[in-house]
Length: 305
Image 1 (cartoon, rainbow, N blue to C red):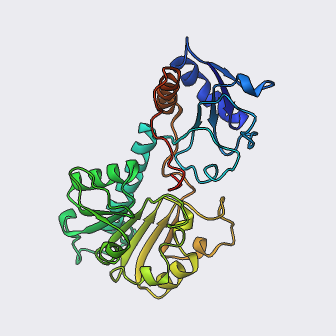
Image 2 (cartoon, rainbow, N blue to C red):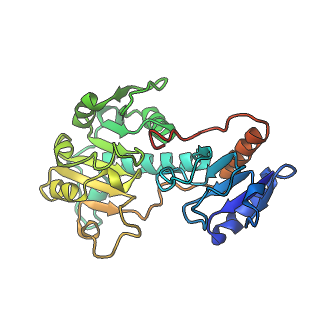
């Protein structure tokens, strides 16, 4: 089968070895398509050159190399099956990021300035005494929840559908969102970018968080009303926000998040597709398509992910 690489050329050296190794013997990966009808599948990132998918009449799979698909799912020329990237390496990176920052905020590690002052009057609670809420209970959110639960945190998940996840406590639907936010001493936002989630954390909902709550957002920058977040931070209603994703990236130097002492900016490093493990996901889906089987992790166009 002929597979078109539709991503930035500078990414190819990282993917070349793993992809060629995993697809050896059954896939021919090409970098241009003089005859679009000869292409059977497309490996896609939003940085690729092709945005008009209509000429690719025989393509049976568009495999995203990114976990997020919001920049392609609304493309009116895309009628072919679209699959999300659910990469074990990306998931592990997200789990480590969320667990690390949750522990740092939980233990208040940043209060120990190296200034000669002996601060031993405030002993942190145990993880079991700290309530954490994870917004988004898909592949990433559920694994983050499991990691937090293994450490001992009192963790609850919330999603719009409320679909059960084995072994985890899940709240669902708009009516349950106030409960999920009201208990969240630490809130982790891992929802996708859809019309229903944009500005979900607005002034009204941020006001539901407990006094001094912390926020970790490695999900999507559009989930948060930036002005509302700055207002609750400046009013000292919230203790801290760790932000990894933004509406504009790179985050402009003049953005007020850089200057706010209650904000930690990280440069979209929480999780990335790892070519070694991502190539295995790609190869499995290409094999399934070649065998006439449905691909894994197909996007629901009506839901946007």
